[in-house]
Image 1: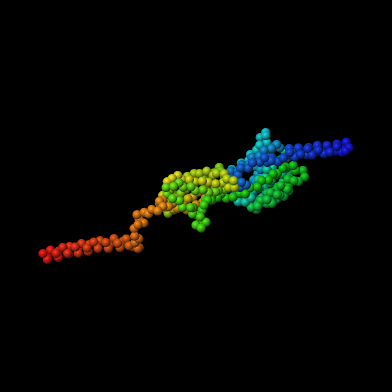
Image 2 (image 1 turned 90 degrees about the horizontal axis):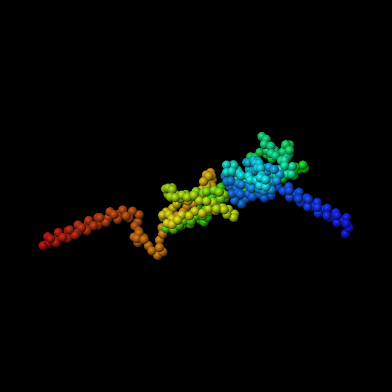
Length: 331
């Protein structure tokens, strides 16, 4: 192999290494993004959303939030190591609508200047390149539940010649808060398994709200609606969905029917569920109560029995008195 061929190969290797280095230095600011949401890829309305990123070495970072009936941008200034954080507070996420939302992390690139920016006009949201409007993505009220096509327009503009802004998209589904009970009867909708007096009560369920939330459990008499007991419980993180556990130590509840309601404390429009719980009287197997040994009377039998018995006794007393008087006369 000639010296010239070796030289050409060596130059190619250097060029490849140089290009790799350039790519590495211009990695998007969200290369190390960590998202803390209500659940995996899910945001429940009125929950806090935290996005933490690394490697933001080109100055400020902008977050675009695009979703059904919603559009907003936020800017964060990274620290000296390139770490940055965006926090969407409950009062903000409460404005989200159900559907898919795009979270676009925008890095200004090596020139540290944002070329791509939104222009909020009365007829819609226009996307501009260095101040010049390129396209109109419409009004936020017209955004579909599937936000992918709208986000794609923004991402495609960032690929134009002369633009070194780097967009990295992340997608999350926004849901209304919900609470659900485990082991609810399918044949008798909304009914929990019967439990017994004298025993501890354990009720579990799932929810899509985040672990930072507290849930309120109330147990009321099913007939009078009187509050029997209430308790605040935490949300526990789960693999696919979060869960909650409610327990009441022995002796539990007296025999009767109860309505159990669980709800999120800070969000009352939705996000609650109720179920019927029946507590049965504890009874040792093979035993019977005194009442079970009594003969059953027909309807109204107790009243009839209470009237006839005194009459029978009175009649018997008269007969006895008559016999005594008759015996006395014969003497």
